[in-house]
Amino acid sequence: MVRYVDEPVRVTVPATSANLGPGFDSLGLALGLRDELEARVVGSGLLVEVTGAGADEVPRDASHLVVRAMHEAFAAMGATQPPGLSLRCTNRIPHSRGLGSSSAAIVAGLVLARGLVGGGSLLLDDDALLDLAARMEGHPDNVAPALLGGFVIAGQEDGGFYAVPSPVDPRISAVVFVPPTPVRTEVARGLLPATVPHAEAAANSGRTALLVAALAGRPDLLATATRDYLHQEFRERAMPESLALVRSLRADGHAAVVSGAGPTVLCFTDGPARPTAGWATGPDDLLRRCPDGWQATHLDLDTHGALLGP
Image (cartoon, rainbow, N blue to C red; front, side, top):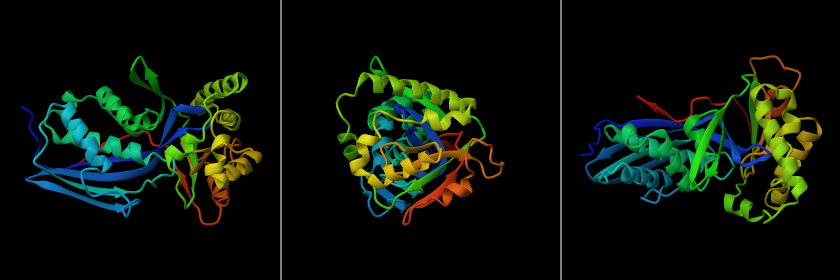
């Protein structure tokens, strides 16, 4: 019989950036910006407390995405639904900006639920958790790095999902430029064409392969490797300022892309504690390129993924 633990469970989950230019629906990277959550089984009812990003927009009932994910995990583990739940969310990942806030919520809910069940990691291992997260999100490119950390190549095959971690050169970090206005993923996806020319698909495949190698140890190739032919330009109508910033940065040789479905722009750079490595302008110079009204942040890449806390 499944037993719930008495003490609260805490988890932190990183922001993520998918696509990274050419790796549409297949590449994802965890970033050093984390949501923090705490859940506890209580005698009755549902209490959801939210502070930070999206606090004025998300529901406080059972439709909250973290709560929905928790109930999915309880069912997958064969547990009866708990008598009541208390959930606290401290959100730092901006919502509807292409930084994986929904994937972080899903992964957090699944990990919290697993932690609240005695022996939960045996009832729902990481492979099963990833599969459940990808089915809830619809694709694995954000949920995989949110769960595993680092740079992940992910996809779907024969009705299931796969996620393969790939190395990242420790010199690489990123600056994210976050605009004040969100764009919903459904809107951005709705602008994509049903087909693309074969030559452009082939070019995109080559850039995606090159990007894996560039991230692993050839950061000098990142500007070339992040060139996209498949999706970014088609989304311009929903985020013209983002595409203008991408073009401006790339014209100066920077590896700039739309993060996920946008509208955030991500630009690869080197770290603040390291001298500029010759392949990138330092982060301080990039931060000065931030458009008025936007927020720019320099982030290291996250290597841990979802972490249970004390």
